[in-house]
Length: 237
Image (cartoon, rainbow, N blue to C red):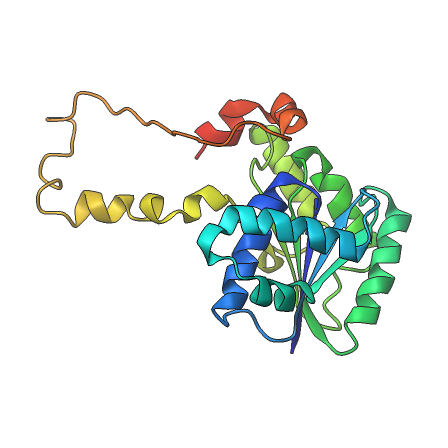
């Protein structure tokens, strides 16, 4: 069965720095299904070839020695670009038409919101109005990146608006930082290590200091940080 990954925010930092390099590595390891297509959606007026070229440069930069030109050229054939403002309903109707052309047979579709959190609700609403959440012709899933709201009230509001379009089993709320191997192994280190387990408690620990040492600057994410702030972006991790 065909698989289509639709990335909203395709011209952004998360897509070029994390998502495409990760998908490329999966392809290198033959862990990406053969009939997988990746459709990028953003307002930038790229052609598919321009988007592929831009991503080739960024993927080479972020994957280092893992990058191979031959395997990238093969992977790049899976990449397609659609210029659209996903907050405009008519634009997503155009996206729906392009996806129908690509998905000549029944296909699984995954929508990944790699956009500013302020755009989540209008994008989700437009996915619904364009019929893109309908599962009559294949499984549909949506991935929502953190921050999921800015407080309890807005988190509930976003949850409610998402549920008006997608059922709970279609929704994946994700913080890619939590996928880091060291973070996932913290509980194992704490409870399965005979050296640390007896002494990592309030009787022996005076305080805990967590340092997140980042080599990457804000870069092109200035607008996002102005909206979300570093506390909501990083400290909730």
